[in-house]
Length: 98
Picture (cartoon, rainbow, N blue to C red):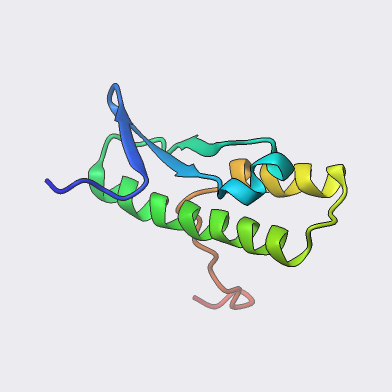
């Protein structure tokens, strides 16, 4: 099986791992963003890693566009990343009709 970008296997569980761009490391106070993908299945890990990649890219874009965020705003960005519920599917509400 080919390696999955930004994914490492630790024990039996896959983890997402992405370097923080050099110019943002001091602001985020992180060198990399690492998070368990909560799975030992490679396909599931790939899908979840894609979600986290997009979320981390959004954080980096926000920081580049708005470099003067407060510590509380920065903390919230990072908390949102680590609190992201993976594989969440939001179903539309059909007012009782399915």
